[in-house]
Length: 317
Image (cartoon, rainbow, N blue to C red; front, side, top):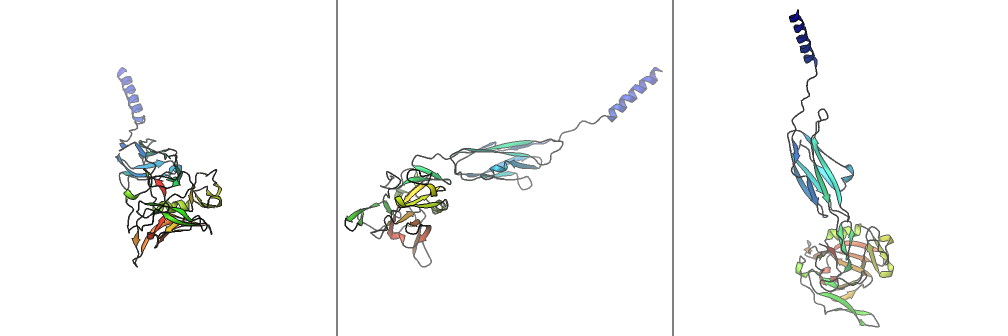
């Protein structure tokens, strides 16, 4: 009888054991990234982060951060996350994070690693104004290596790739005739602007064609009291007393083959891009020009400026 009872107990235990749920066995997942932190300069940059994983993976990022931090990558294409951070247009530091995780989630089992991205904001000196990611000087170049004292002075005019700065003085008080000082001497042809002839102060340089074009695209408004233009997103409301974080370019005219022309009527500003020869052998070079009489501003490439001297407005290196 006792043997029969023992058999029944063992049978029940065996039955209970057979009917109990099996222990869930979690998958073996390994997933990690080659770096967890990226610090990006305000100029922006590109990065590649390697993903080490034995499963399919994907990436997640805050949708609102796509405007400045573009991310691409998945295990079906490669083992790399590609990160492209745009040039900053702010003095404020920006932060976001990218989550790399297993693509197929089993029983809510998620393995992930995180890439933290920080982009530093611009540090704008007192002589500069930040406009759409470029720090522009508030002043024209005066003597070689120096700015004018205020934002509304014309400063000196320079030939392309020449260190001599010309100013204009009244030669005839009655007729207002002006001559360049020192005596005019045409500069030889050069297809690049050498660093030794860069008249901007230390830490500043002559802008590129694309930077001048972007300045025009940011917005501009003629300002009659000072005979020139405000440039920047808020140019329409800018005044001498409140520049609205815009820069003012005075109409300094030009020196054309030794003759002072269009003073207070037109403004000419060099780009640093080199001269070139067109199919007819004419020398061509880029610059910004505006005309006060018809409120016209444009970026142009012309065939005549090789004999001219123009104003210079610098950007921060």
